[in-house]
Amino acid sequence: MSARRLAAATAMATLAALAVSAPAQARPLGATDTPSACVAHRDSVNIGRAAQGGNRKDANEITAARAAAMESRLAAALATKGGRAAFTPVTVKVYMHVITDGATGNLSSSMIANQISVLNAAYAATGFSFTLVATDYTNNATWYNGLTSGTTAERNMKTALRKGTKADLNLYSANLGGGLLGWATFPKSTYDVMDGVVLLDQSLPGGTAAPYNLGDTATHEAGHWFGLYHTFQGGCTGKGDYVDDTPAEKSAAFGCPTGRDSCARQAGKDPITNFMDYTDDACMTQFTSGQIARMQSRWVAFRA
Image (tube, rainbow, N blue to C red; front, side):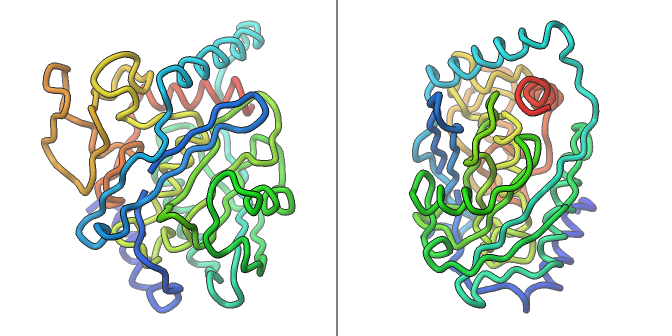
């Protein structure tokens, strides 16, 4: 067991008594790519299969056309840097917004600290680290219960609570609707109050949303926030996820199917241990060098 997994397992045991009861849930993806709003990605769960190892499925996967449009904006943003687009390691400020319904959803400070530790372990080789600068708690039953992406409740919540600049990561926790584990926005050139990551509260380390309760929902969604697509974006052909060293993958992987090869005519087995697939938290262990380069270039283009 890796140090990160051991730490997460220890956190789960320590925090079990503190976890607030919620149905086990797991992740589909959704994306909206419009000039006036951040591109939102949603990850959700087939609740009936969660106890059997999970069954994450796509809801609104990014189309090839939308991905191509995002790539064009990236090229334009990098061009405006005039050749000065050099990445230097950065510590991302994190603002944690805990939404509650009375005592329900009232995450402990230890649970939140463990989530930041999981993020730092997952991103240790990327040039990105995370520091928690503030945590606030908001008692709002409307925002807490059944929150979904693109709703008036989400906009009202973020308008009221978001802090910092587009370089700062705002995390929101609630009891999400539609079986959602979370969603994120992709980076863009201008500030948007909707920017950030929304998480099912029980997906944090020590939560009850097994097998998605080791904190890697935040790792996965932060990957989108930095500009990564899913490893299975585009399937076996075309541009895929626009990363050369992630093997092509026909569809999302669930559980931890070692040896899966859904694009047999392409080199490499499916990247089931990649943080940007849909496998269980315990199966996710890595970003590739190409993904790291992509996150860094998007940081320079859109967030630095």
